[in-house]
Amino acid sequence: MLTQNNTKIEATLYCAQPPSEQQKQQCIQFLKNKYHSDVELSWKEDKDIKEGFRLEVESWNCRVKSVFDWSVESRFQQFKDDLTHLPLSSENIVPLIKEAIHHWTPKALEQEVGTVLSVGDGIATVSGLPNATYQEVVLFSNGVRGMVQDLRRDEVGVILFDEGSDIAEGSFVKRTGKAAGIPVGEEFIGRVVDALGNPIDGGEAIRANGYRPVESPAPSIKDRQAVYRPLETGILAIDSMFPIGHGQRELIIGDRQTGKTSLAVDAILNQKGKNVVCIYVAIGQKASSVAQTVDTLRRHGAMEYSIVVNASASEPAPLQYIAPYSGCALGEYFMNKGQSVLIVYDDLSKHAIAYRSLSLLLGRAPGREAYPGDIFYLHSRLLERSAQLSAEKGGGSMTALPIVETKAGDISAYIPTNVISITDGQIYLESDLFFAGQRPAINVGLSVSRVGGDAQSKAMKSAVGTLRLDLAQFHEMEVFMQFASDLDEATRKQLNYGQGLMYLLRQDKHQPLKLSQQVVLLVAALNRVMQDIPPGEIGDFKDGLLRYMEQEAPEVLQEIERTGVLRDMVKEKIVTLARNYLSLTNKT
Image (cartoon, rainbow, N blue to C red; front, side, top):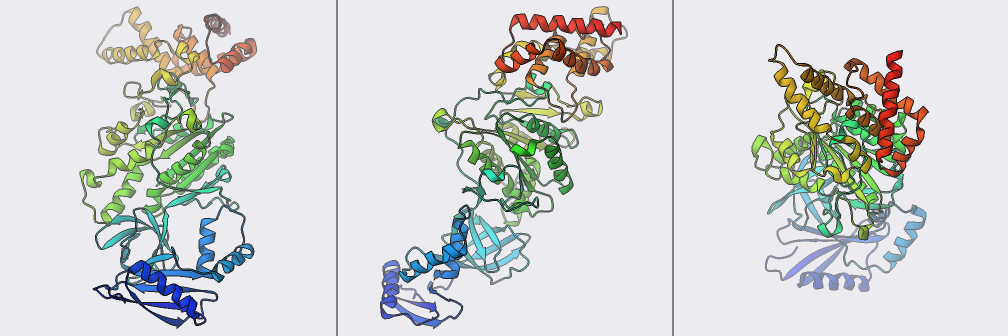
């Protein structure tokens, strides 16, 4: 071993046959150059090493072991890990390795080997890895993988990606030198994978085109450009009042069972035929709920352009923690190729809970609501990776729809306020509206898009008019109506008009509307065509009006879809046709 005054080291060379004098001198010279001390090299026979060798050196305090593994088995495993995206087999890899071993040299092959001090609840404490880096993947002696999550003076905290029941105190751990990452490629589209990129849908193995770290820096300001392209969700209430643009981060927030996931799924369904890659990341959801979402996407043909990353509630906390970053890495692969990406994180509340569990097990100091001090950074470094890239960077984009669950409508809680401050707006779903039959149950007063009209087509800007103002006046008047015993005719008409607008915004789930359909409905409603229709009949009137427009004036719908512009003449024609249809329904 290396003496404390660093005067001499002892190293052991393991191989099947005794090394030649030249090979011994190569090893001795390498160790002298590395440790700047004299070397005493011994050889031990190891029949398990068929070809090649393994060189082991221990530090003076026996807490750090350096291993230089140049055996066929070790090199083959490294080739498989590094070249997973290439169609190589053992038949064409092994000859390359054997040729390299024939001209063997140990330089740059050092591995630090540490020792497990304790393990439990998906966390292992390891000593002997002084040079390990944050988020580096380590490999335990039984093949279990982990990631360095906590760095201390004499030990590191490792979160486990696999079942750790076989890991015991004293087990060996070696560094891999790789940051935690996920394979990426075109073949992931249409598949359901876990947080590490492994297929879990029963399909064939996925051949990757590359490998990306799960965490990477967000695009710099100079690599971004302003959000300017509308990403239509097909949901009338959102596209008209809270528009979302490519590269935006729009939060969906509300209590459980208020339609948050349905809203995000509808946005994915509406991207069909629009050359947008959609990624749905399920974090801590029930397996049955995720299966139902995947089935919905398949039935509507959305899996043809979608990827589902699933870290369900039955998965260990480390996989739930890493899942959104893995989904984001997949999205970045397509974004950097110039494509548009829509990614849904469902939901970040459970993600924060998983991270809180890991942090407490790692011994970090708890803060507000027992969350660690870096909980804000947890989500900011994830959501900041969504952007509209500049033309110089290919013009790709990644739009994020994070979901956060509230309790009893409290949007001032810790995690909701954190994510609200990071995102570019929020869509707030209210329980009272949901139970009153308003679907989607969007609270117009508390919802906002900070991008605004920049992410709206000209046709939608022209059609939406004073919709938000009219709804605000209606809600204000509705409050006073509770105390009024008698209403004048003008007030009654205003209330009927506002109530009709609320019914106009009702929309069945998984039935997104085209831009032209939304424009027709808004123009008709804001020109008071529907004012005298009983609220309960507005749904049938909307469906009938759209069918009537498709029969009588399909060119109007086609022009709006093609140009994204609403000309005054076309607007007048829509109003005329809507009044004609109203008169036809009154006659019947």
